[in-house]
Image (cartoon, rainbow, N blue to C red; front, side):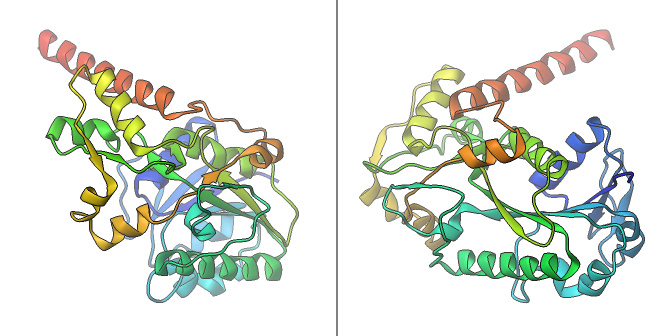
Length: 297
C-alpha cells in the first residue's frame, strides 16, 4: 500500500517533521489553521482536512490539548474514525506525564503519574488516542518528548540577549532532544510501527540528561563569551513564573533504550554538546552564505 503522511500542526516540531518527511521521500501534507505553510508540500486548512485524511496512511499530531481536550479529536473524530487507509498514528506527548521521580530513571514501561494540570491534560489526550487506535485497529505511538531544542531555540539566544541564567540545583537534570532527532524518530516509528489496535510508548530524548547550568556553560564556551554567574535555585525561583516553577519542580532522567530497540532510531546528537555544536555550525554556515550573496550583489 502506497503510504501518505499527514501532519497536524506547523509549529516548531511540526515543520521539522514535514521537511524531514519530504526529504525522505514521503508523500506528505500539512494541516494548518491558517491553510498556509511556506513549505514545499500541500497545505490543508484545519477546518476541513477530510480530503487529506481520505488518503492518509500515517498521521502525526503535534498540537497540545486545550480546554476541550485534543483539538484534532474535538473537531475531526468522525473523519478519523472513517479514514479508510489509516494504519499508524503518532501522537507527540511529553515526559511530563511521568511526574516527579526524584531524579530516578524512567523507562518506556513505567506507568505515567502526572500531577501538574498540563501533564494531566496530556495524559487524558493520550488515553483519547488510545481509544481511537483500539476502535480503528491502527498502531499508535505515544512519543513522549523531553525539552526540544534546535536552531532558533537554544541557549545561544539567551546568551546573546544577555538574559541567560546558570541555575544551580544540585542533583537536578532535564532530558532533551534536538528537533532534527525528534523528526527522525517520528519517521523511524512510522516505518516500523507496533501492533495494530494498541499503543506503544516511545521516548524522544537524547542519551544524556543534564543540569541546565551545564548546558548554558557549554553554550557560552562555544560562543566564546563569559558564562553568566551561577544563581542558586532558591534565588532564581523568586523570579520564575508559575509555569517555570512547575517545570523545575520535577526531576527525572528519561531513558530511550527500548525506543531505540523498537524503531532502529538513535539520536544523531546524543547529548546537548553535539546538539549545540551543530546549531552553531548551521548558524555560521547560513551567515556565511548570506554574506556571500551580499558580496556577489
